[in-house]
Every structure is written in C-alpha cells, then in structure tokens.
Length: 156
Image 1 (cartoon, one colour):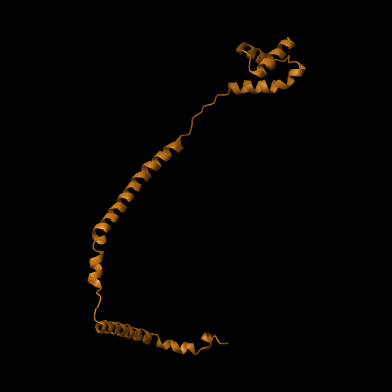
Image 2 (cartoon, helix red, strand yellow; image 1 turned 180 degrees about the vertical axis):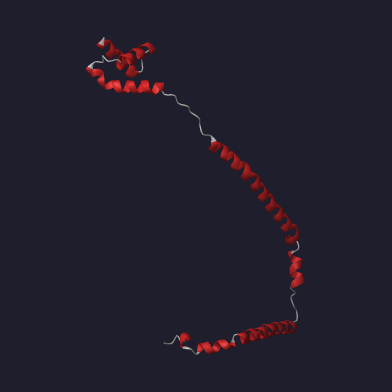
C-alpha cells in the first residue's frame, strides 16, 4: 500500500490525480497509520481539511465605486456651470467693452495740438499736486523734532 501511496502522491504533485485518488490520499494522511516518510505531509493535508470546513462569507466593499460616481455627479455640473459663466462673461466683454474701447479713450483723453495749451494744463496739474503735497507735509511737520533725538542718529 505504501508503494501505491507514493505513486498517487507523485501524481498529486503533478496535478494528474482523480477525485477518488485525492480522497484516498486525504483519508490516508488524516488517519493514524501514516508511514514515516510521509509524516511531513500530514500538516499540509490537515490544513486543507480545516480550511475546507470553514465558512467564508465574501461581501465585496463597493462603496468606493459609489463615492466616485457621487463625486462625478457633484463635480461635473459645477464645472459646466463655471465654464458657461466664463463664456458669458467673455462674450459680454467682447460685445460691450471690446467694441467701445476706442470711444472710451477718445472721450477721456484728447490730444492737444496747441503746445501752449498743453503747457498750461500741465502747470495746473503740477500746481494741484504741489498744493496737496504741502497740505500733507504740514500734518507731519512736527516729526522733525524726532530727527534731533539720538534714536534716529545713524552717524554713530
């Protein structure tokens, strides 16, 4: 019988056994009369027997797929709405502001042909700026007394 088991084991390791031969090997390995040269296989066949009796309930977790669908359902309409808004703004800009940019410049600024008139406008603008600068510096004129203190003396 030991010789038959060796042949069946050889076929088992090569994957050539029938179901009846595999059942015979399993019964032999789980019995108490296993030969000494087959003792190393007992743990393997006991493991197979124990695993066969376990009941696994496999429930795949597909929540990640659902969350991606929900994210897409949330993101895609928002992206489309933003793109449509930008397109609308660019269109309005092109129609109203784009075409009238020449007239806006012409209404605000004019080129003077007379140099004396240009000089007078420039002198008026510089006088206005100078007057306002004088008013602003009067407000902080008392700060000159701090320049005399040693705190602001950087020559030392």
